[in-house]
Length: 77
Image (cartoon, rainbow, N blue to C red; front, top):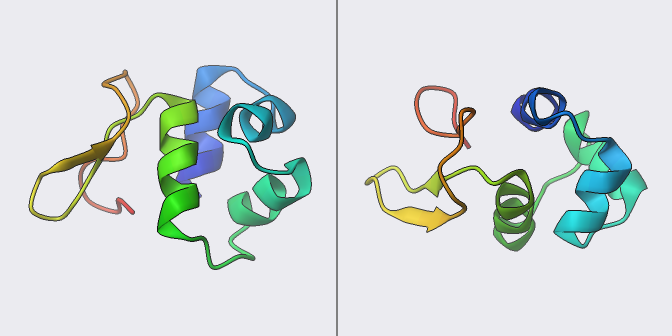
């Protein structure tokens, strides 16, 4: 899943990402495994914690900052 790939590319632990995003570490694990229906609010929180740009299909930036890895492009949220 993209979140796990971005987290690993950033060199941070699942627990650190969960803490930064303000969610529980077990929740973050279940999100990475695709076991949760994640809310838009939590998608935004995780994008900000990963410091990636999150955009709508129309190209409007919703959250985050540019970084090497990004959620833009095919297969995005």
